[in-house]
Length: 354
Image (cartoon, rainbow, N blue to C red; front, side, top):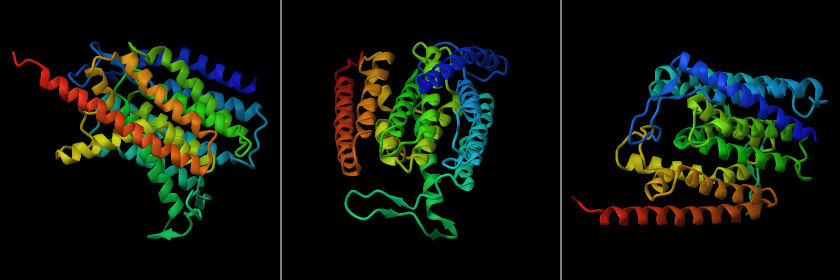
């Protein structure tokens, strides 16, 4: 019942705060002007959607810290401050990018700083080992060029998660929906006997509730978008929760497997074609599904379903089982991408010239 209370509170706050942030987005001109063919919307649409999610999560977390009988021995208070400060950096950077359309060489500095705050605060630096289904665990102890290997790993992990959700944010409700599935997955994992972390479970369910409330406005047809800060924030929170849970990287990877593999494929193809990996286009899988005739809602539901199946399956798997699931995910994703692109190319060849 306590978890349901926080989920409901976060949902209500997001539902109430989102229209306010939508109004502020138009007032501050933080809006998305349609730029076809990549943009799917026809009208000028508000950004700053990450702001109500961030505020809802922050308020619920403060309520939890004050009245939730929190054990700060398990997770010191400074960790909450660090996560909040890092998230605030993302919100500031996101607003500046949404308002002034910052060049990529400037915009990436904000997520880089946010990701750096986490290992500097001590979150995750105590992780010395990663599970290895083939033998001894992989050591993250030691130093590399004067820096702790665990800290470097955490920074790279968070940057990867953030830019995965950032690059994926091209379809109404897609990032928020997959983030909701990720939050619920990590919530369920937190309650298992092997993990048993009620604090992390509470933060995960608050995140899920915030995203659920936001989806009332972000589902197709969306009246507000996540914006740069919001899309980064979803990946950041999922990445941080996976670290706090004891480097449950495989579980988070399975939830985000489709977006991660899709983004990796698109980046490789852009680089191969000698284009900037940060330049927007219609190479992403969800655009190809739209081109095949699926609606935005149908495309989102397909990707939701794949993420949910692999994510919730991972909750009940041990290390070797997760490895098998990862291999199956790679296979399924490979076949899925090949099929979609094959049908897409075949239809292009069959199109009349005149």
